[in-house]
Image (cartoon, rainbow, N blue to C red):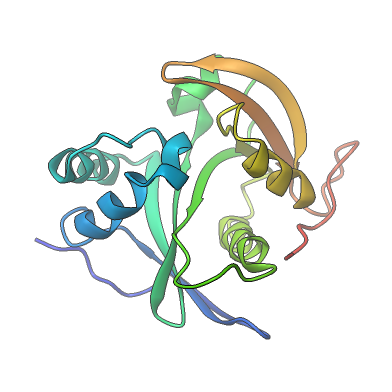
Length: 197
């Protein structure tokens, strides 16, 4: 049985197009996700050698959880990114730092470009993703934990307002924790709203 493909979130971004987000269908999306995660550019995603069947199994498992979710983000109907959300207290990362109420974890991978690079593309996709995540008012702080060697991802998150935390050892990688307080938070040092570019 396949999952409905209706978006769970949609917004028109001036000068960019319509951005929509829907849940991953582990069966119907397996080919697309397998193509993306096994490319060299996605090496930090940790699935370079995964078979199509293994990719399907992983996303079927995520789909079975209440604490972890996977989504595809689309631009004008074309998939351009894969992202996952999780509750840190139900994830290995929660054993590596002091989880606060309202913490919410994310992973983001931008899909391969159709043509050349487009200035501001990744920032716009990330900004839309964060807008979607923050529609739930109970989420007070966003937590990211890219591979510590992924300097581009870390720099991109910092440009979006994330504050770097410590490096931690997770089961499959050494990661850099980064944190983004909800814009307008009354916590000291709350980050500004994420920049789109």
